[in-house]
Length: 303
Image (cartoon, rainbow, N blue to C red; front, side, top):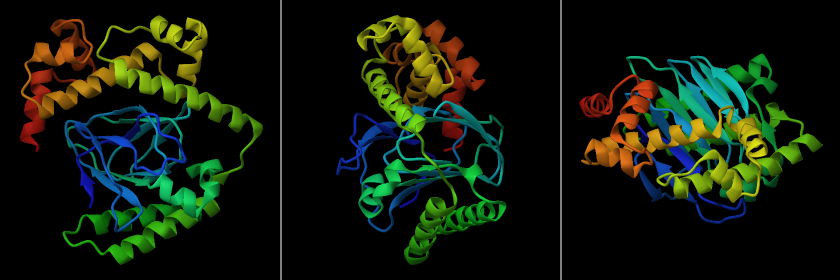
């Protein structure tokens, strides 16, 4: 079924040949989610408010983002893209990416289609080696892709979903993506893929240790890098420093705690790696424009 008001991203060390769906962070908790039996993707309509960004992550399969009402700033493999209302962004399988929606008072209306990578890998083995890019398409193919997104959005908004038509549109989208939007790979792409694997390992380490006192230097040493090399490698894909990413990740988890638990503010701060409540408040207000308490009240009032 459709997933609304949620953020979904791949976490954990999952091989591209893994037959399992993998571990996902789904909105507010860790949960292993199977893909729907009715169609080969997770389809989500993000309408949550206050708007929340999604830290650097990756998926086994390709992803399509379609914004209907606001700008999105998306970093894919270290390159920053702006997605305007009525536009798409294509993200290749395995590509590291982060999503920063434009903050507004109305919330967002963003369609996310994350295809089942294990399933598609069997059906179309070239998927893993194919780099897709929205800008590679012709004006006509981009219009067609946008129209498919709009049709899919309308279908999943219905109480009774027409699965036959939905599959027709999804497979049509896949054919369009891998015939009109593929970017030719090069030796540089292969080197880039190897570097991405290293960064995925770093992201897994952060997931496991973000509650602890870790620093850029300590994580660099953990992976056998100098601080300078580690910093360059990470920023190349994240477009932000490791220190900033760590703070963003902690804030992301803290925001989920505020919405899903009754923890006291001091407990939320300490449980998510902040040294004290004051520092947590300051970082949270800078990120979201709201205090943690204001954020919690807004979430519940818009639930």
